[in-house]
Length: 143
Image (cartoon, rainbow, N blue to C red; front, side, top):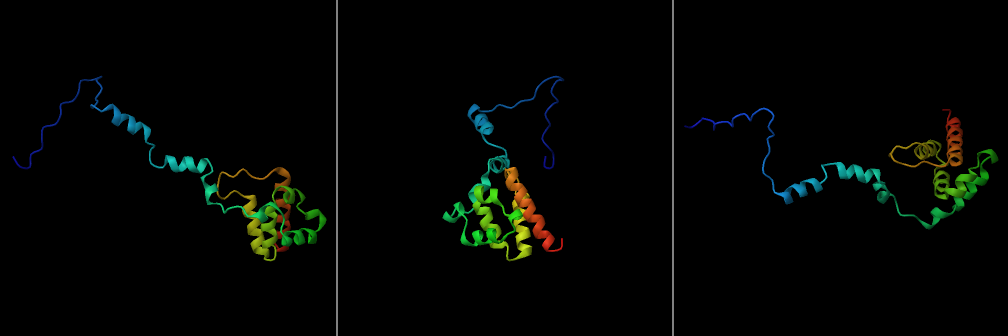
């Protein structure tokens, strides 16, 4: 009888429902478990990336000396007043990058555009100031 397959189950009558006996506790556990990948997506949606951000520094709450010098040196129509007030950390980063024109364009680009996904974005006045600085810096590079 080697090589022979066991007899197959007869086809159920039309309209019948095929089921298997299951333990209620096992069924409950199966319902409580999230499918693979769902938990990771939920974490991303709730801002899970925030734990990857560096810890705030005391200098994030105020403009650094480098940033103050940079703001004062800017033409008055380019000074990011709203950004200085609301996001000194952002101005500090821009000021630190400003000596390297290409790098400063990248810094501004990453502040303006959401490459990570799920970012809230800046208030309109701040966004406008960042857009103006970005355009100004790109123009200085000839682009």
